[in-house]
Image (cartoon, rainbow, N blue to C red; front, side):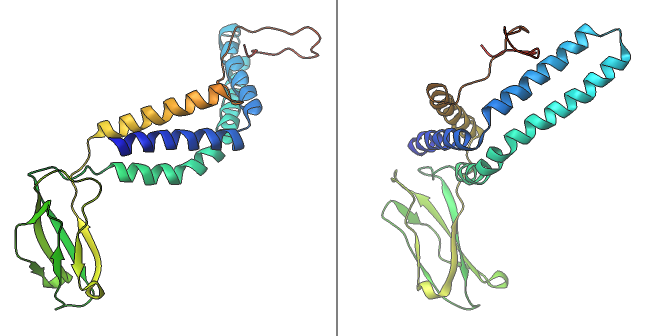
Length: 217
C-alpha cells in the first residue's frame, strides 16, 4: 500500500510537470472553445443541412487539433506510466500461500542451489526441466517480510535469470493508483500556472474585433 501511495503521488507530480512544460494551454482552450461553438451551431442551424454539414467538418477538425495539442505530453508520459502499471500488476507474496521459483540455466546440466531468507521455506527439492534448461522450486512465505524477498541461486555464473511467480494484483490497485495520481495532478495544476478549462455561455468582449464563441471564466 505504501508503494501504491508513493507511486501515485510521484506519477501525479510527474504528470503536472510534463503538462506545465509541454502543454500549450492557450491553444487547448481555444480548441475547446471552438468545439463548444460548433456544437452550438447544431442547435442554431438545425434546419440548414448545408450549415450543419459544414459544422460537422469543422468539429472534426477542431477535435483533431485538440488531440494534436494533447498528444506530446501523452507520449512523454506513456513510458513511465506503463512501467508503473506493470509493477502494480503483481501483488506481494501472501503468508501461507505457495508459489514457484524458476531459474533459467546458462547451460544444460548446470546445478544451482536456492538460498532463501528465514521468512521463506523451500518446500520441494529442485525439479529439473531439461528441455528448457530450467530448475523449479516451490516456496512458501512463513511470515510477513518487508520489501522484495531476497532469493539467490548459486553459483550465479550458471544462472541467466531468476523468476518468482507473484500473485496477480487486484484491479483495485490500478484504480487507486489512477485516483491518487489524478488527484495529485489536479491539486498541483490548479494551485500553479496550469488551470482547468471551464466554459460559460457565449459572450463578447468589448473592443474585440472578432466574436469569441466561448469565454473562459
